[in-house]
Amino acid sequence: MKQLTKAEEEIMQILWNLKKATVKEILDEMPNPQPAYNTVSTIIRILEDKGIVDYEKVGKSHYYYPLLEKSTYSNQNISKLVENYFQGSFKNLVSFFVKENDLSIKELESIIKEIDKK
Image (tube, helix red, strand yellow):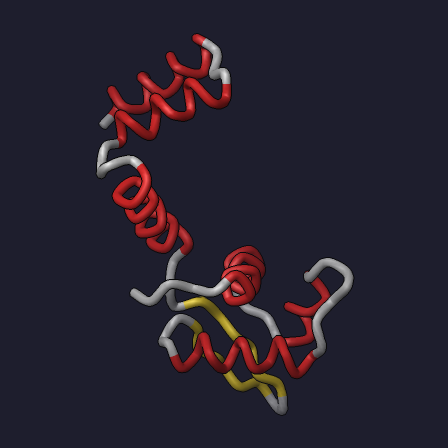
């Protein structure tokens, strides 16, 4: 899968949340200062060309929806992060967060419980 740009990812976050939306509805969800309508429309078309977004035409409106699930994209990005920055080791990733973010014992126990479920 191709990597999304920051602008593409911002739009995808909105689409994942809304499930289906017009360009105007996506634009309405964006923080100020909002980009131009044409900018959002162009990014949507790029996402469509990449096979990440499709649309349904209702009257004169196009309702865009994601073809890529958020969980799939998240998993791919986390795997890439672990590979690129933690030598492919999730242990190194967890160790980094323990050291850098001062995780509590309660948080660590919660992580261990999640791992045990697998």
